Image (tube, rainbow over all chains, first blue to last red; front, side, top):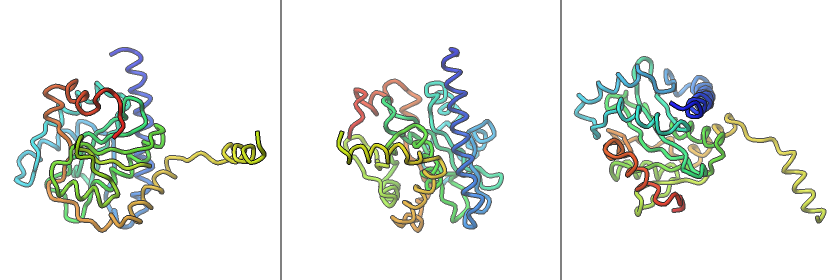
Length: 173
Length: 72
């Protein structure tokens, strides 16, 4: 790893952590979100995703260990978040700023197929992304490739607009 | 420079920059305002195409961002 790459990785990890710390303050103060906490993605979180593959409710067949490792190497400025409910991982999300830095993309998000009823994951990812976009100076969020119509419609309830040509949704901040 | 422009630039200079906490408050207010809090998250919730990314990350990134022109 080049020194410049390592420096960027360390600098942006501090920024990512600062954003998640703020989101956690909000989660702690919210009586509706008992037990939810967000963290950076680590080995413990990645190991938990291997349990997801046995669930019949899972809609994707993703290898998070490989996906995260490659994405991390390619994108030191990435957005990442592991959302936990107690000791159970309830979602992972991963994205990055666009090349000119004016937009923040969510490339991959997956909720645990076994997450407890009533626990929603995108809401918190959206909040964290807005925080990270603020630091980067990005003025738009994009959510890439919704896996089906239900998911696309769900994003639309957050005010995101679908762009069929490139299969993503966006919202101006 | 007109007085109005002077006044606006002075105002912009004095305006407190937004913090991460402000941005988070803004995001939460947006969620409340659009009523997304009450939406049901679909079962097996996911977005993205990780398989395509893992197969050929350069092609994935090129396809998703074309010629680095990120307009809609």
